[in-house]
Image 1 (cartoon, rainbow, N blue to C red):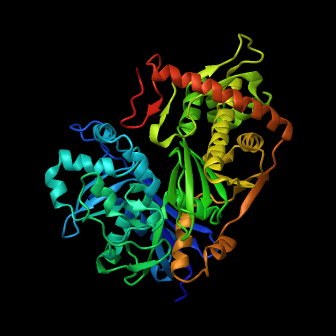
Image 2: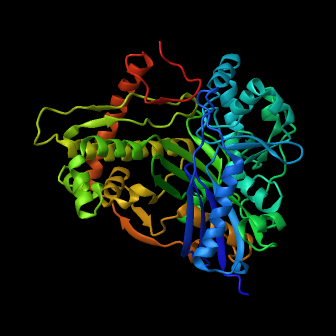
Image 3: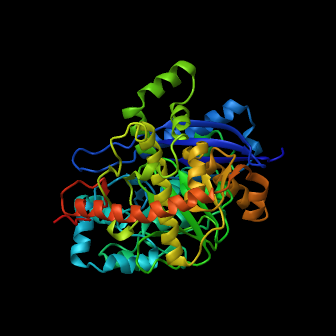
Length: 525
């Protein structure tokens, strides 16, 4: 039978999906199950990962996607996996899961504070090797397990990530790939492999780090138990995948050095590819291994743009929501039509939500709107709405400037994907703020597509990653910047930097409350 199908299993923060593609990148079917990560009431900030229940959900998605399409599982040439990054699992000597936490887990704040107190310089020293800070990495969580659950710590024989866990459940083989593994802070960027000496420097064990496998490399085949669980054929090739954002970049064709992507969702991520594992000398921005061998990524995160939009819609645009319910549309479409009437720059009004990233001192000022007058003709709810859109693009401009300062590189154009890219207005604002073309891909499941492309690469279907891009990635539209608006936004950006600095100072003094601050960051005084 012809093997002309690729399967991606995507374990996201809020759900798990099985997505079936043909060899040209066309999505044939998707099955999804929502999941949640419960907090242990004994441990504030905890977000436990239920590996037994969640494997049932994952394998159920695979079974249903085959049933839904009526496809013969023998047609699947290869399977690969992707997942939320930063989530970790611990295994005992028999390969049994004994502890796991999701990416949003924040229980280790005390451990971060203690690490900083003991050696304030250590975080930046480790960042130079790993590209990671304490804020998102596994080191404080492992210390937490050591301190709070010593019996689990003593039994731990291996550590892994969720996408590798999915492969382990399918094949019985446990290998960690570098794009997600590097988010632990225990990988050395240069070698794209574990560096146990990093753990040793924090007083952690250095004997729990197993084998690695490069992204897009064949790992093993579906074993008897994996086939019984999922309905896949025993012997089906399984290939190392990657972290969700890195796979998303592959799915939109951002695979070579000096290419960049912006993913606009609940968070906005700016990803810039480099050919070097060098980090930012000032440790302000995250650096990960890309899911493409020989490529690394500078990653800057803007906090909560999608959530801010949802809050604003629900709190102030009930009329538009009612219109959408009556007419079967989307409330944002009505909001965008009105925001189109507001000139670029919103008459000088600005807002502050997420700051430009500062990885080792990561905090955000209290949410703020400022510099508006009591003039309803100019400053109505759609002015405030557009200001949120402009603000998010301005933070992205700050991230692009930050990465340029650290690397000397600047993309000639950028790919914009995710939910925010559905807004024509937001795309045009982004292009004009950045001053470069913005390309929007056709694909709606970029992460799953990138994962499937890695599966095809490991199966030898594509000669290299650029061949996979040529065959699978297509774009729907390119937005050129309005250079008059670019001039307006450039002046607004310089002013915004000063406004945000002042707002952050108020939060640092305790006059206002941070929108968010990383574990262990305490500037108030």
